[in-house]
Image 1: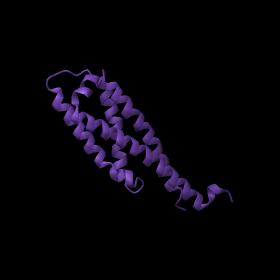
Image 2: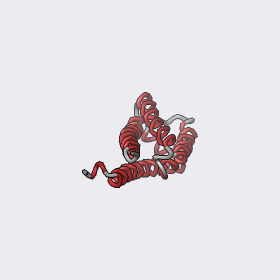
Image 3: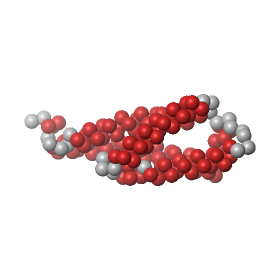
Length: 140
């Protein structure tokens, strides 16, 4: 019997795939939260990067940062147990794809945010899919 047919190997492989997803999600949430905290403290830095100089832009930057922190907090259950808490992962990945499209439509300096969210959306989708399939393969 080959290793790929044993239940112990399948469980180990599923755990490895789940941990890879959790690590990438942790990095993404940490980077998003760090960026949001920086924007809350120093919003004009992000505004200059995005080339937004309007008088109403400063409050909107802080609102954006607060929403990013809130969205990150809602994904903590997915970080702790991605297989049993699938909905936060699915919503988070779908939200990243949606924000990528929005940032691309806005253009300009938002292209950097589109690149950030787009790369993480694709990578998280691939790793989440592998983690779920790995878990399904542990069930005879």
